[in-house]
Length: 435
Image (cartoon, rainbow, N blue to C red; front, side):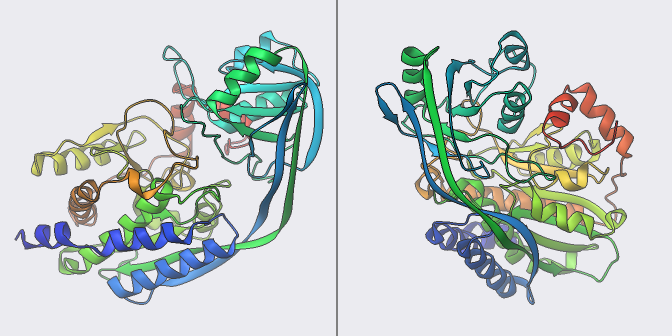
């Protein structure tokens, strides 16, 4: 039967929820807006499949105040990076280019204000996360950190610092646009500049949203996203679209519930943008041996073609490619590890998991983590096509005939070493495997 395809392609359930989320405007972790968005998601999942709930947990809250980069000629525009500590620092300005590990090794940045770009060169063998560059600066003794966007458009980037052990960062950190960064590097390299941040760190709570469909099996398929977004934009791409897609899949799978051999649990996490805290909380309080797989949606709809990171679980790659072949619609599969979204809090323990995003032109986050992460960047056609593919993929993963073996933690650790990811995770405090 294929009637369900027409129902999904003409449904406005998910897209309407996306509009609800972006209209909240500020979904920062621990804020009233994040709570409002979680409650709206709970209500949408209840309407789709019944009896959704909130599971609350404590986090380190952070609310931005003012920030500035002070130069000999006046103030340059910037935004504080979430969980930057408050502070006023001055020091010699150093434009460290891409901020590769060897750049820090080759340059003395002690007591200086360091600027690094948000991308890496084409020839470099891996992506360097913002927090890795930040903690290289901290370790090297820098006084302040300036994160320069590589995307044009006068868009300063945001993104958190801090670690799970120490949620607040150690030195003041701000983001500047490509244009401001270019001016800073051209005019002030070697001159004294100042960086100032005021912010309110406080106790807060976040929440995960849960709902289930299908038979009452011990084993579960998790279909996940994150509700929170950075406070500077609508968070349409990151990750309103992912949460809206979870709602759409719940609606679609409710119509195919008799095809599910395994219970499907929908989880829309809170506090992803400040250290994967919602998924960490859930993974720590769940029997991970009973998770068949994690289908994590973060970055869907940004482009027309789905991109599935499978973390070396071959059965997951085969399943995604089979769905693409069945619908004659290309699905991109990467077997690489990607430790930067909510799936990771399960995959790092060996639970099979996808990170599903979408192919885009350019490098890095594009409009993500900037003021330009807005609804107008997304296409309802892409949403509907991807909803069809992801619905079918979820049904396949929940089928009694589908099997994927868990890995050992040693397997994941070895893979991280193979892909040259381990060193950066150790710098940021994200390495979970001891010495």
